[in-house]
Structure formats: C-alpha cells, structure tokens
Length: 288
Length: 324
Image (cartoon, rainbow over all chains, first blue to last red):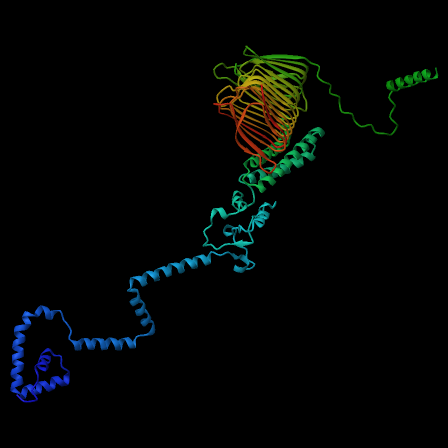
C-alpha cells in the first residue's frame, strides 16, 4: 500500500458507478497496478455480495445519493431559468392555490366578478344608442316602466292598423322580464290581432262591409219606403254610435269584457239590420 | 142675400163641370190609360180531403187571412171578394194516399202570379197541419194548428194555440203570439212583438225574438233558452224564470224591465251604459264593476237555490227588476 492508494469511499463510489468518467479511468488504472487497492476492491465486492441481498429491499427504494440530488436540483434550476414568462406565472399560481385559504379567497373573488358583470349588463340602454334609426321588433320591445305616459299614448291611439310599438326604450334580450314591471297597456295589447282587431272582430267588419255595399245599391233602387228608410237610418245611426263608443272603450281598456260583449252585440245588430234590407228584396222577388 | 146667390151659382157651375169633362184640345195626344182592374168581387169556396198532417202553403198579396184548425182531415178555403183559387197537390202520403202537401194558389191572370188577393180569406185546416204563409200587406191570424210559418212585408201577424213550432217574420208590422208551444222565432223590423203564455214543446226548444225599432213584451214565458234583442226598443218581461234557464236580453237604446215573482232565484248579470240599475228584489252582489268609462257591469244573485242565468245588456237605457 502506498500513499496513492484509494480510500474506501472512493472504492465504494467506484463500485456504485458514481464516479466521473475521468475518476473511473484513474481508479481503474490504479487498481490494475496496486495489489492492495485490488484486494480492498475485492473485499468491498464480497461485502457487497453479502450485504446487498439482505438490503435489497432498501436499495430498491432508489434513494438517491447527495450528489444525485445535487444533479437533480441543478437540472431543475437550469430548466426553470429557460422557461417562458407565462409558465412561470402559471407555476406561481398553481403553487399559490395549493394553499386552501388562498384558494377560497380566489373563488370568492371570481364569483363576485361574474355577478358584477351580470349586474352591469342589466342597465337600460336607450334604443338610439344601440341602433339609431332602426326600430326594434315589437315582440322584444318592452316599455320602460319609468315612461308610463309614453306607453299610454301608444295604447290610446285609434288607429287599428298601428300596432303599439314602443319606440322609446328597449331592454337587452338577456334581461329576464319581471311581470310587475310590465306596463298594463303593453300587456293587454296581446289581446289584439296583428291587424289591430279583437279576436272575431275582423269577421264582423268584413261581413258588414260586404253587406253594406249591396244594401247601399238597394237603398237607391227604392226598395224601402220613406218611413222604412227613416227607421233604417235611425237604427243604423244608433248601432254605429254604439260601436264607436264601445271600440273606444275597448281600446282604452282591452280587459273590459262587458264592453267587448256590447261591441259584439252591436256588430251583430248591424248585420241583422243590413240583412233585413237585403233579404227584403229577395223576398219580394220570390213573391213574383 | 147676394152671398147666398153667389154660392148657389158656384155650386151650379161646379156640378156641370163634373158631369161634362172638358174635351181634349184638337191635336193633343191623350196618353193611353191602363185598363182598370177592380178588386175581384167573386166569392169562392173550395175544399179538399187531405192527410191529417198536411202541409199547406199559400201566398197572399193583400187582404185578411184567417186560418183555423179543426178536427177534420179536410181543407176548406173561403175567399170573399177575391181571387179564384185552386189546390195544387204537391205530394201525397204513402199510407193514407191523401195529399200531405198542398198549395193554395190563385187562378187569376194577375201579375202577382199565384198569390191571392182578397178582402177576406178563411181557411179551415186539420189541427195537425203545418201552415206556411208568405205575403206583402196582409193581416194574418192563425189559430190551433201544429206549426205556423209566416213571412210578410207588412201588416200584422197574430198566432195562437200552436202545438209545435212558430216562425214569424214581419218586416214592417207587429207580431203577437199567445198560448202556444214549441220553438219560436219571431222577428220584426219596425213592429212590436207581444208574446204571452208560451212554452217549449220539447226539451231544448228555444225562444228568439228580435226587432229593430219596436218593443218586445213577454209575459209568462216557459222556455228555458230565451234570446231577446232590439235596437231602439224596450224589452218588458213579466213572469217567472225557469230553473236552469238561460235568458239573454239586450237592447242598444232602450230600457229593460223585468217583473219577477218574489220567490225568484237567479243569477243576474246586468251591463248598462248611460242608464242605471234598479232592483226591488234583494240582490246579493257578487261582482260590481263601476269603473271609469261608459260601461258598468253588475253580477248578483236573487234568491237562493235557483240556477237560472239572466244576462241583461243595454247600451243606452236603464235596467229595472220589479216584484210581481
């Protein structure tokens, strides 16, 4: 043995393959020339042969050595320095969320943010600001409850062909309409057809229009005598006045069922009145 | 003295003028006068054996018509100062072989065709007969037949003791129906309608009365389905309400007056505009809508237990319910 002989640690590291390449070459050369070191290596191998099977389970756990840990840490550090910026932020967030208290606080913040966004979108926006010059579709138009006079003026119009379209304010489609906020005039306009008639009213109007044409011709042909003509014109004036009043009332308050009944009865009376004239001529012809 | 002389002279001159019409001036053309057709002066009476359930139809242009039911299977027609008549047999009964559908027609060459013109026409028919009359200016009276169907332009229609069905349409005259049964449809343009002591012949027979400018007066109506309407007239109902009945009475410009027994039970729905609502019978209000606007509505119950429904509507008039 000389001063250059290997210590037991180096020999053990050689056996474990933990030496660098240069050290392995140096140790191998030395062992080949030094009997003492060769004997020491042999003895270490024998011990390993005895000890390793007994400690095989422990060795299978792959406990890294200190140097291996150093290598791992060095590799991690190098890789960390070479990562992009966003990955560093993501890693920081993931690391932060590992804490339960921080995760709970972050969740609350997210929920609050969503709610605030929804609330801000609920705010009424003037239609002119949304699309100037383009009228919104009536089905999506909702009169702003803060503008009741405007809604009433639309509902009170006497034009049957003018559907009550709100041209003042609309609300976003995502807005869930609360029933208590709907103006009554708009809600009741649903009882009118698209042509501005009540259900069934249009058929009355058409029938009357058809009958009136033929009756006007017959009146001029002298079917009716003077007294009969006076009675007819008087009754017709009464019926027309009744229809006019009831139409105004129904337009004012479409939920007035009594007014509707009177209106329909007046229409029927007018039809009967017109029929009485037209059927009279037919009857006279049948007698001849 | 001078005045008396002048009056006598004037009388003498006017009498001479009446006797001798002024001669036509020479050269002037006299328009052709249509031949004068006086009222027929003939009196005719004819009869024919018929089936008991015969259907009789006739048309009368002018005059008075009286139809009576009797217990014979025979139709007898008496025409006083009027058209000559004939029976037009349109169908015969299979079992009896007798005519079950006849038309009474005029044989006169008149522009009115088969329609009769007479001062008085009396017809006796089987009590189970159905009578259909059309006419212009005629006063019709039908008594004690199974069904009566009358349609005229003017005159008066009086119907009584009908067992089956009544249909009357008088455009410029009144209609009176009494002591009859069956479904009834009465309509007049400018005349009044008076009905008393009538009822349904079968379950479900309805009563309908409509006039434009006249008054409708109903007394002791037993129908359960009643529909009455007028435009510028008043409706008067006097009598009990049938349990389960449905009464719909409306007028555009007129009053509605009901006189009901004290024990009446019914649900009343009254709709009125410029008038008011008055009830002498205790009315338990179930709904009252006297809101701003021309229309007012009241729903209330009279009595207890009854389920008759009375709907009264007037656009310009009052509604009153009085105790009988």
